[in-house]
Image (cartoon, rainbow, N blue to C red; front, side, top):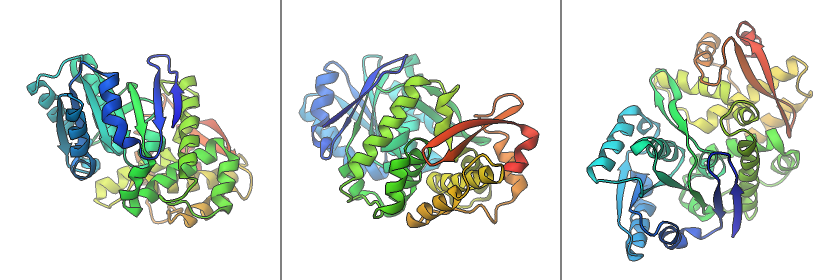
Length: 355
């Protein structure tokens, strides 16, 4: 088993990574939190696959446990669902000695993490991510949030988990479209920090849930994020590079949500990465030919790569409400070439030149 320590200033914790890890998680939780009750927060889909088994496993280890399932999908990442879960915990008389278990993908992890950060001004929680996107990205680093009608992740907290348990074998039940969505974030990590990994994605066979190298790729992404969030826990400097492709990507998600057009996070980020790389080339900030290489890797993984067809003014308006903006400047994440990312602050008035 791989053990990855995350030494954030606010709260150090460990990430456990191994195929087949899920079967031992109840025993591990019982040992780590022997006097706690557990509240498993999941969604209806993951709950049916793994929730009852986890609950039974904890009960077999003489631990008290309740399961709280929300509808699957981004709509559950809301203030209303956040409030319902807080009320449920209070009704069941959970206290500060107890532990929330986030079992699911990015939506469940973000929602359950924010509930943990808020209930009784903070209770412990652990992450058991069940999607590729959550395993390599959202379960690590302590960003928790819900969406508002005005935009994504506008209400939340930086709140680190007590532990993260990553089992790549859980991805075997993940729909192919969801796995593809996670590949966008995996490609992002290669682009911002690891040229060798990008070359592997570029020249090697397509990565699938069954790939023998998947566990190693997950580990590499987690280690990159570990290093970044340890250096900048609260997203005031270096951590911003993790948002490569996200400025435009979040704008795409917001525009699509307002129009009722289906759009996933990974696909939006894929388009955002391709667009900002092309803009970087036009500005002389990104090595010529990089955007073509990115486009080819996105195509290889059945991800979109063009923002053609989106209304430019709508995207600009959506970008300007992004929480990552600071005062009168935007901090765009750019790459010089695969593996080399940097922050590029610009005046708001110059944003149209980068779309």
